[in-house]
Structure formats: structure tokens, C-alpha cells
Length: 98
Image (cartoon, rainbow, N blue to C red; front, top):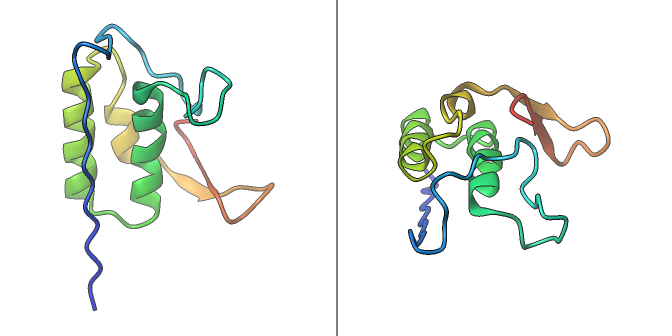
């Protein structure tokens, strides 16, 4: 039975600076778990989604959407990143964009 993944992303232009550049491999770049920037989280999660089987079409759409909000990021890299099980803990993936 196919499994559908639905992702809903919301961002407010008033609270997200468009000049922000994602920090690779840092979904919680400010050092406080759960408090990282939205750009960093998007940059981290797109390759992770690809690794875990989300369709390339949706990956491309996510990257294109992120590019419109954070135009200074290299979002094309997130669409082709390669990932492998993490050496320290194989339950997690480590991607080339980190």
C-alpha cells in the first residue's frame, strides 16, 4: 500500500529575513535544540527527505520554494545531495550538504 507524505510549510516574510544564508549541516545553528533558523532546517531536511524516499519531484519543488524565500542559499545542492548512514549512529543519515 503506498504511503503518502504530506508536508506543510509556513513562513512569515515579517519574521524570516530573505538575506539569510543557510548554514550547512546545522538544523539548530544557534546551539539550542528546537531553536535553529528555518533556512538551516530546510537546507538540512531536503536531502534527508530524498534519502528516505520522498519523490524527486517533491524534492525539486521544496528546493525551488526555498529558493524563493532564501535566494542566497545553494538550494540546487539539496536536490542532488548524496546521503549514507551515519558512522556514529546508523539510524541517522549524513548527507553531502552537511
